[in-house]
Structure formats: C-alpha cells, structure tokens
Picture 1 (tube, rainbow, N blue to C red):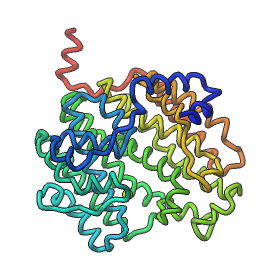
Picture 2 (cartoon, rainbow, N blue to C red; picture 1 turned 180 degrees about the vertical axis):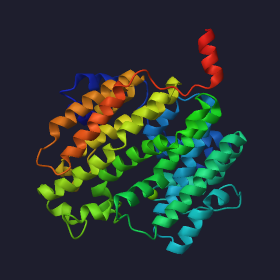
Picture 3 (cartoon, rainbow, N blue to C red; picture 1 turned 30 degrees about the horizontal axis):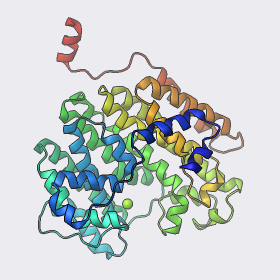
Length: 396
Ligand code: MG
C-alpha cells in the first residue's frame, strides 16, 4: 500500500481514489475456502468465493451487475478460466490436451468428470478440483444463459486446440488467436446482456465491435506480458512482426533500448490501437449504467496499459503494470460515456506526447488516435432501439 501511495505522489486524485476503494473494502483479502467450508456452502457461494480468488479486479466490477446477469457472467467467467487452465497446462500431453479442450464444454457438465491436478496455482487447482460446483451453479441458470456459455466454451476450445499446433505468424493469425480466446468472450457477453433484457436485443448482432472489445484487452495483455511469458517459455507475439528485428524472441531482452526493439513494440501497440474506435462504438450502444461500467473499466485499464508500455524498454526486462493509483482512479471515476470520453481524450494526449517521429508506425498511430477522437465526437449516440422503444420514446 505504501509503495502504491508513493508511486502516485504526483497524482493526488489517484491517492484519493485508492483511499476511497480502501474504505469500501475493495482491497480486503478473501481467504481460500477450506474443504469443510466447501462441503457446506452452495454451488453459487463457492463460485463467487473462487471468483474472488482467481480475479480480484474482475470480481470488483462483476459485483456491481444486476443479480441475474451477474450470476450468468460469473459462471461464464469461471467456465472460461477452467478452459484456459486446460490450455495452459503443458504437463498434459498435446493430443490429450487438445481432446480435452474440444470436449470441455460437455465434460464440465458431467458430474463424474475429474479435473484434479490441472492449474498452475493453488486457487486454479481448487477451481478445477471442485469444478462440479461451478457446473452445479451453471445448471441452475436460465437455459438461455447456459446455451450461450456452452456454445462459446465449445468454440473457444476448438480455437485453442487449433492454435496449439500453429504458430502466430501474421497479424491476421494474431487477430484470429485473440478472437478465439477473447473476441468470443465479447460475443458471449453481448448475447448474455441481450438475453437478460437489460440491453437492447440487437446488441448481440453487433459481433464485429464486440470482437474488437476482446481483441483490445487481449492484445494489451499479450504485449505487456512479454517478460512474464518469456520466463514461462510461451510467446504470442506474431513472428512476422518481431522477426523484422530479431532472430529469436529473447533477443529483445538483451537489447531493450535498441530502436529496432522499440519499433517492434510500438508496431504491436499501434496494431492494438486499431481496435479502439470499435470499442468506443460498442460502449456507446450500452444503456444500463452497471453493464456500461463492467465493460468500460477493463477497456480503460487496457488503454492505460498500452500507453504505459508504448516505447517503454522496461517491457523487455520486467513486468510493467499501470500504477495501482491509476487503476483505482479508473474504478472510481468512470461511470458514463462522458467520463470515458474524457479519459480517452486525456490518454490520447499522453500518447501523442510519447510518439517519436522516427518511429516507423507513428503515422498509423496518429491515424488511429484521430479515428478514435472522431468516434468520440459523433453525435448523437447511436441507439439500437427496438421499434417498441422508439414508439415509447415518441409517446413519453
Ligand atoms: Mg491460455
């Protein structure tokens, strides 16, 4: 906590935001449930407890959602964490792992399935060992939610299996891999929101921009995680881009400051920024304030991350993260599309000031930032109202 306060010393509003979250209990530690507790608590209770353990930042935004959609999103998230734990478990032989990925959507619903031992931390291993409780929670959801969750899990598992045998080479490969592991989450969430009736049913027709929401988040993480992934001997950076400057991916680690190294990093950040105008278009469609925050906060964090890593040689040698204070400020301050607009405008200015004119992708970056600003300025907000809603507006 002290080091976080010191890091935000020149940003008093960040300190204020951290204190506010602290007083709200947001930084409170949730203990891992023990075996005795697990036997006593309901499937739903277990699911929320394990959610707190596997993703605190996600748990914070999910708790704000209206109950019905909250349960569906919680189950969706845990199902995908389960699938991802299978994808990431290199101790399972490749063919067996691929078979597991392809059938996870069926096996997870079977009470006799046993996923014990899968997962790289104690919390993930507990999630997998007790997955029958997540399945129990899922089975109690309205069938319309179950159908979305199972369908996305099936398609994601197939995509993960495909990429286990295929390198991410081109920018198109990168988009496709990110589509499977994140863009599909955007599709699924849109379908869940539309099915809940809390957002316009036509939201689920806007699949392109829902996909971009996922790609923007996923690419920000993949770029930021260079050092962590290198240490874990996995890499998702598209080779057609990094091979312009190196023969092997670990070379960047030995010459982080070289202009060619930074040009690769900046090209990837620029590629991620390509999705920002779509993300803005998506956020403008949302009507429910809690759903808006749930969608906007991770996007704001991803934007801040991309700006933090842009032209930053530290990415190659250590794990770079945005200040806890900045994350707190995002959590506290972003409530409406206007707040998000203001945030994007400010972040764009910061990024503009970091762009070097000698960087090969600087022209593209300026172009994407311009497109984002134009999208923000578009007025009025596009609505996807149904005919009934339009009638209602006319009358009221
Ligand atoms: Mg994975």
